[in-house]
Image (cartoon, rainbow, N blue to C red; front, side, top):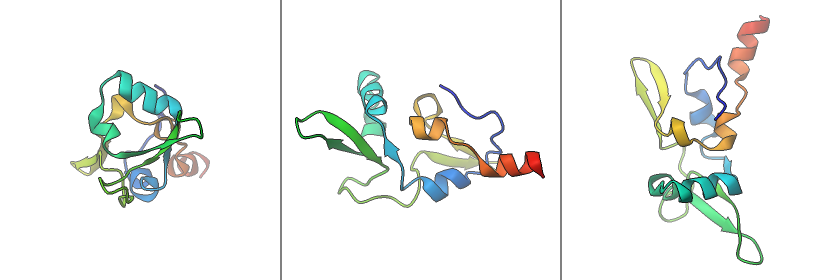
Length: 106
């Protein structure tokens, strides 16, 4: 899966956007096929009119309320890491870091 090579590992994206992101249909299908119940337990899966998976809310508590940041982010030696890097949602894997872009132009 693609991940931006210039990530500064500051964790700002996981803290700022972690509770407002959406999972795609493909994310949910991939996690089901891979048996990633740990991830699915934190996703509010949404269904379409005919019962098919339409996507889902990232990240939620068992009661369906959104959490304040990604529950899979952890910090070590001043850097933030993704605890599900190998299976992270598409929206995370393709995130464009404005901080990195600003460093390049500025």
